[in-house]
Length: 469
Image (cartoon, rainbow, N blue to C red; front, side, top):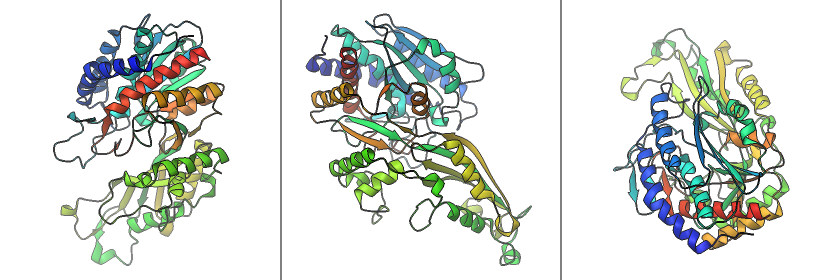
């Protein structure tokens, strides 16, 4: 059976990244192709990003490569690639090309749409989450074919709606079902890594509930000196409602229906991750001087991030800017809620519980509405096949020089829930380059280039071992 030469693969991956992938990602960063959930007029910029990636992919020296941009009416496009192999068995490689909004707070000299390389880091929105995935997927197959190492048939699916909850993806999965087939192995390049020193495999993902909570108490604003003490503040009512969800002192979600037990094997993985990462579990975040995390117990923090529900308020309306804030009791307050839910929890039932909890018995007879605009399931990996466990560790040792690690992630990749349900027998390698301080979705997002190079070689190695299994 074919085995990939690690030294040659490392050299080739480095050359491909430096001469081809980094220049392409530099141009990709310049395109503000925000996901449709954040940009109603998304099409022009999304088409630019698709065209850039499609053009590079079509030029690749990958035997039998077929590249197609699939467009269903009224939906974001999908880049779909097919690469024949030495067996009819199928590997599916997944990524996305849409981006999060700009976000404020970029440091001087950086901005979301201006690429800047500083040493090993390429700054700009979307390169690490997840623009590199298309390039790395084909580069991994190039590494195999350069060494004439056999591999299974592969399909690459790159969507353009992931940051909006992958709402268009089910239609494409159905549309492309015959061509996708029944993959026995899935590689997803849209996740994180606990450090940049070894290969990290994601074993679980949290789900997501998103929506807008609005409290109306008046039909128009009134003088606060006249009304305060008589008319309850919409902001105070909002605080009462949010306190139904989480404890304001601890952040613990109070709804038992949003919790699930942590499986024993995931608890053991979390303990190992805590021991390997140490204080990096929380030190990677840009706390202001003197600030501390919710706990200093590393294990508890990891479990909070991966298997426990949490509430975040990510946007607000009804509040004027400080410079325009007069002595007025405002008629309403509206906030955007993002609730991460544990793996194995039904998101539809969870959304119903959330809406019921917020809207029932409105304080002071106020008008309370919660409009859930998106939900996505979490995901828990099936038991790892022995061949994959060995292949992942071998790849990590070959290209990083350290053993592989496994951990849950706090984010959401809706595609994994869809695939896990559709292909329950498939094995999964969910991994990525989003490590300490990479700050996807926030300011100063960067891609750690050496990790991208090593990860590409690791994917090639594992795909070779998939064929050899």
